[in-house]
Amino acid sequence: MDDLTIRIIETKADMIRDNDAEAALLRKSLSDGPLFVNLMASPGAGKTTLLCRTVRELGPEWHVGIIEADVDSDVDARAVQKAGAAAVQLHTGGSCHMDAGMTRAGLEGLSLSGLDIVFLENIGNLVCPAEFDTGADLKAVMLSLPEGDDKPLKYPLMFQVADCLLVSKLDTAPVFDFDMEKLRANVDALNPGLPLMPLSAVTGEGFEAWLTWLKDRAKQKKDGLLQA
Amino acid sequence: MDDLTIRIIETKADMIRDNDAEAALLRKSLSDGPLFVNLMASPGAGKTTLLCRTVRELGPEWHVGIIEADVDSDVDARAVQKAGAAAVQLHTGGSCHMDAGMTRAGLEGLSLSGLDIVFLENIGNLVCPAEFDTGADLKAVMLSLPEGDDKPLKYPLMFQVADCLLVSKLDTAPVFDFDMEKLRANVDALNPGLPLMPLSAVTGEGFEAWLTWLKDRAKQKKDGLLQA
Image (cartoon, rainbow over all chains, first blue to last red; front, top):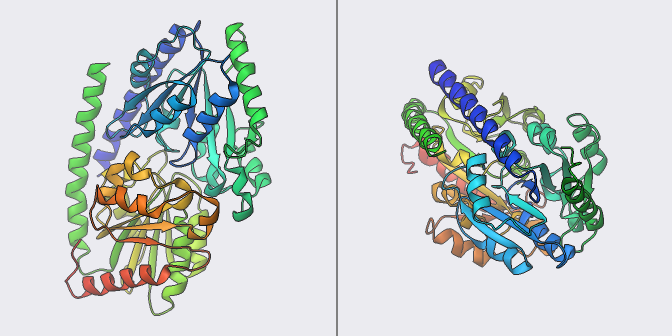
């Protein structure tokens, strides 16, 4: 068993190193392209619903492309397309995360010219996607209120790598025992000062801050001033 | 990129084959032991809360052991211990699932003699844990109502391997658009007739069915009649 454990770890380290190199190349090749955001969260945290409302609220002057990654099904790509985004659905088979190679394939399925923002909706998973650089400019992590304020303690890497943290399903606050101050403290221990944006894709509460965050960074990228 | 993809798949297949063999050995060595249940769900679906109420409702005549697997932290082991279970906390480092070797280490941390039921609370993840046999007798999968009725479409393997499906947070039904009939249809397409138990660990609604399911199987195992 000890041999097996060691072998797995080495393979994983190789895989992550190879992926990091490919992600860096991909990011470089997109330096004149749209802002590219990797959206990560648990299954059912509301990633697709967030993206649908984001596309609608940004309005027709913003051109948005979305790569939907799922183990199976195409329900998400249909939903965001209906909301007004250019969409492509990737099936990862059994894979639990997106890597840079899979992301490149997704980007090739979109026509990037004319797009202002591209989202990668990653597989619903708080563990594996945190380890794999996809070549995106920024990592938006979302935690839904029903999941609880203790999640940074259990899945620390995801909260360490995040460039912002959306706290979704804010409209359900009355039925859950969720302490936003406790979340803030748990997050600050891992990633001090991480922008934290509570919002609801149902009521639209909190969306202004999220849209401003996005638009500012899309502009910074266009001007060559984006700092991840 | 093609080479990299192929290499990963081969490594994974080897790893799963090795694990299957170790899991079969582990299960055989536990044939005279307590009922051993692998509990799997998304982050924040309510696995720990379910286990705490389960331990309390089973009462003092049932002796329960719990292996808590987390990437980090020990909040879950403390919680189930307080509820009355014998508990051990495993830290998986970055690993996104439990395998048979890690499970064996967890079991060695519990004193099995005198226990009637042992739970493994797996890492919160609907993808990777579905692929790894831990040596448990049964797989209990839990989906929380806030996650939505479409999850079997997106994470099919988890619902295929399940021996029962608990639908948690039933008390929050008024604030979510969750269709239990749709879930039933989505599940039946993958795993026809899978026992589906809606319940709330807050109100106790639906717990009778879950406790009966557990007790029946613990008795079957004791009598050498358990069929997984």
